[in-house]
Length: 512
Ligand code: ATP
Image (cartoon, rainbow, N blue to C red; front, top):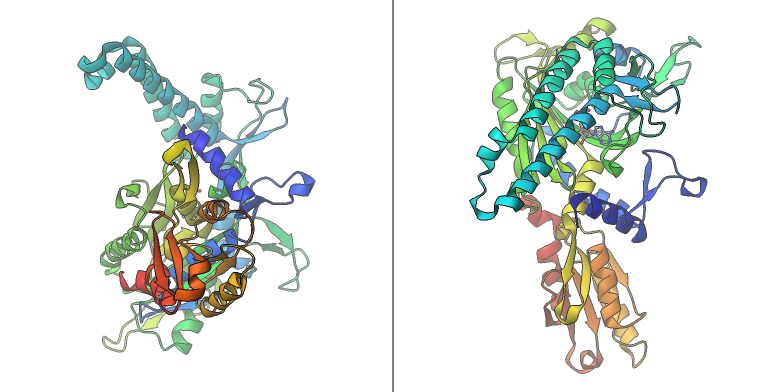
């Protein structure tokens, strides 16, 4: 299966097993909006808990808040979002479809790279063992021609991006002969800037023309509460404020499932530090966040840092933690050193003094800030795409299993009486009563045991507990492990501790 096919299968699996549904499906859906089903919500909550506890419990100097989606409109002037949170858009006059100009160009460049890769694959096939890829890439005329084309377009694209030159974007699209995939024509409008913020009307300041924005990031809710938290919590620098909440962006290129949505959730932490110490903290948070990811056991090789060369005007350092998604390494989390940009601007625009008085040195200053920002939905996609496994079994059979890290699994244990009679369901009910206060569980007595195992594999349940006729006499049950499929007999009284060892969030946190 190609990575692309695998991704399609994963999307279908998420729907079939109650993880993620396209929103408003009965009305044919709503682009880039997804709902979480009965399994998805539990997975997402477990991810959020892991983050929240790691931030606010394991760090004495980090506290959490929950601020609102709506904020005073000036918030978004201060943050720079009103002026600069834009995407360059272009419309095709024939299909009336709208595209991101930068994405059209990036897709064009990706196609050139694909062509080069295909050429290399052909060479490999032709020359077999004697194939020298480096030499082939440096000498093959088709590759050289494509590479030159790529470099030329890429250079023009970067220049247009740096200069924010909308006409230059359009010219590249025309010169490269990029056409609308729907109409097939190059009948393009001019490129215009399009603000990504959703807005609605509200009379917060008594002015009926006021535009209220749906927050495009949760971070500003932290900045505007900086003084409240610092004072009421008697927080001493360095300290952090964490928050999990919804954010909204009017994303035009809405593809890749829950990777890019119009309504999504973020887990953000703003860490306030003394100016001049921010690089040290930036490095510390890079390391801390990578450890959090790798601790889940999805393979250190599937993560990498991507340091930004071109920095936003407010940042003096920035990096992404990228994950190896089915469509390649892509941003999962951003870590930014944001200087005093946000607090400084809120101070100027609100006229309120936002400063920290350092009792030890007697100085007052606007703190600098290091931010860690991760999307809950992207994290959910990372977990699901890594977990999805098709395994060939003996006898030509196969199984689909979600190898979700056990502490994050939506259902931790399934309890199954072998048959619906002979007192087995009653014992199974007792087992449920023993486990239900500690673990999310499912009770299943329908179909053969084999079929029941498959259903639990498909939602990633780490343990299946079967009550059989022997249980009546020996008080033991069969515990089947999701990943190894091995089975062992365990005394009912020992079940809780055995399951706890593998699925406990506490143990995951202790490893950090
Ligand atoms: P991208 O370049 O992919 O659009 P970004 O750099 O705009 O992302 P940030 O503003 O740094 O993203 O947001 C922090 C995190 O929020 C991202 O790393 C990502 O996990 C998540 N995120 C951002 N936009 C979306 C979206 N439209 N849908 C889902 N998650 C998102």
